[in-house]
Image (cartoon, rainbow over all chains, first blue to last red; front, side):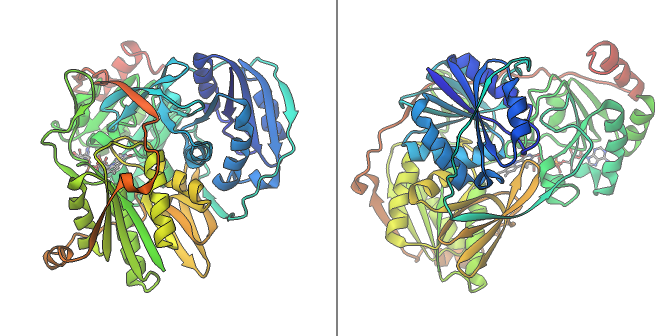
Length: 308
Length: 250
Ligand SMILES: Cc1cc2nc3c(=O)[nH]c(=O)nc-3n(C[C@H](O)[C@H](O)[C@H](O)COP(=O)(O)OP(=O)(O)OC[C@H]3O[C@@H](n4cnc5c(N)ncnc54)[C@H](O)[C@@H]3O)c2cc1C
């Protein structure tokens, strides 16, 4: 049995989530190949070769793949899929974008967002914002799967896989890249950080997120937000934690001025330790918090920063 | 141009679903149902395109049993011109839904299909992309802005790193994210008017597609519940607990 894993990267760096997706592939069992599709992505291929458990790295280095347009990547992956029983990607925006296309082109279903592997055809995944956990058995001959990284522990990176260049340029010609507006930050990625501090509507405006920055600096934390904070324009969309945003499971999650709606909890309730700071003692966030402070965040945050 | 908006009837987003005692599925008996929030955003976007003079007709389509006519009426009240129900009692997976929608696209020839990025029940995030693959069309998923420009549409997408804008040849498929728009409330006169708008019913079985399931749901269990913790009185106490009890900071 062979498994093709799609590597998440930005043409320079292999995303740490891929290490967890490879762990999911190992749980399925089989010969694991990692696909690096991009443009001028040789450094990613080098990093990919070190991922433990991977026997071969396939590199498709072509302008058609520079921005990972779903139309082009899905054609490439579908072509390669002939040699594999499992095709796996991380459930991040790139994988979510192109993988269902692959599934449809192969005429198979997709099993999205798995958090567990029971066997080569049976997987565990959250449904209804994580309020129910489904065990599903695929009846298709090929399995197209996206993996929620919080469900798996990263594999190590002292491997030495063979690197093979594949000469492909599948350009569908139906879409093109116009521009990116990417958030530049010195902080760790939300998905990779061991501490996350998130602000909600209670923060009142974007400027007040500075109160979180001081604490984040001291803890090496990433900064997240609730949907309400993003909708109100306090912070950028890529900071939204939740059912329909980013899923995080850090060692420590600090929710500040966040009420704890089910959609928000869906994105953070697997964190090891949860702290809630909220002035409303009845806020549902306290039902999942290990430690709560009932108080005004504008008093609590400066004091917390000072005492860390 | 015509805009097609596929919509889904789902549990209301305020309801916390419960798992059935026999672990066969979730319990939806007597639960409040509604149009999937992302589908509502899709309807709103289509209606705005019509109000701006870009779209000429907005068609809502839903696949499900008779109950989903309620959500189609909601779409009509929000401004869709007509509706199609593809009737089935089966709970179809996304691939089969996309195959049925493909037939509707072939028949209606819309220039744009706008769908929600995910439904809040199965949380799959698949149907729009699958429809795009089956029709061979380009896709702009997780859209926060849609601008039709001649024979192309520019879609700004919410991606992990921020925003990405792509240009797609029309016809194209768009899936909505939360920031695309804020859906209006249907006014009472529009709700009344919606009752008289055309709603065609077609049987899924008549489409000549093999709709057999691609997976088996073996069981559904509740998630492990977190125990509520303690309320600390002071910041000093919090810092002390995080250091010495939880050991998550040093
Ligand atoms: C389809 C759909 C998808 C969604 N996806 C997501 C998602 O992915 N992520 C997400 O977060 N939400 C999501 N939501 C929204 C969710 O339902 C809630 O509306 C949202 O999480 C609320 O954000 P909030 O807690 O910041 O705001 P609120 O619910 O308004 O809570 C604000 C909190 O701040 C507290 N507060 C106010 N002032 C202070 C102060 N001075 N000091 C201390 N505390 C204070 C208040 O007591 C209150 O508890 C989604 C909703 C829908 C319909």
